[in-house]
Image (cartoon, rainbow, N blue to C red):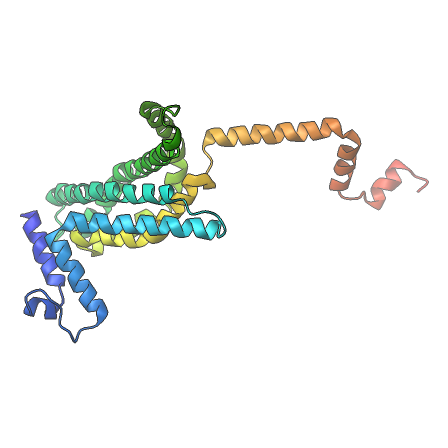
Length: 278
C-alpha cells in the first residue's frame, strides 16, 4: 500500500505534457521540465537505482572538486573519489529502506494528517540518534578501507590482511565519529526538519543529495587530514610541548629575551618603587 501511494505521488509530480503524451514531455516545454519529467519517470520505474546513481555521482564529483580546491597542482586521487562513490551507493540504499521504515513506523503512531509537526520531529530525532551516527561511521569505514586496500595492490603479498585493515578502519572511524557528529548536528537536523515536513518520501533522498554536493566534499576533507582524532590531538600536543622544552633548554638566553619581550614595559610607578633614584 505504501509503495502504491508513493507511485501515485510520483505520477502527480510529472509534468502535464508528460502525462498526456504517455510519458514523453512535450517538445514545447523547457529543458528543466523535460529533465524533471524524465527523472520522475525513472524514479517511478527504478527508484533505488536512480537514487543510488545520483548519490554516487555527487560523491565522486564533490570529492574530486575538493581535491582540486585544496591542492590545485596536486595529482588527482581516483581511489579517494571512487571510495566516496562506492559509499554513496551503500548509504543511499540504507536511506531508501531506513526512511521507508521510519515513515511507516512513526506514521502508524502519529498520523501525518493529524500530527504533522510531531510526526516530523519524532522522525528527525530518531534519524539523528540512530541513522546519522551509523551513516557517518560507515562513511569512514568504507572510504578508508577501500583507499587502504587500493594503496596495497602493488605489494599485496606484503600488505595487511583484510581483517587488520577492517580493525584499523573501525578504530579510526570510532575516534572520528563524535567530532564529526558535532559538526553534523549543526546542519542536518534543520535540513531534515524541512525535508520530512514538506517533501514527499520519494523526493527526500533527492533533497539530501543536493545538500550533499557541499557536505560530501567537507566529509572528504575531514577524512583526509582535515580532522584529528582525540588520540592524534594528544600526540600532537605532546610533541609541541616537547619541542618547546627543547628550545628552552637549548637557548636559555633566547628564552629569557622572549619572556621579557612578551611582557609589557613597566610603568613609571613600578620603576620608582624599585629604584627611587630614577
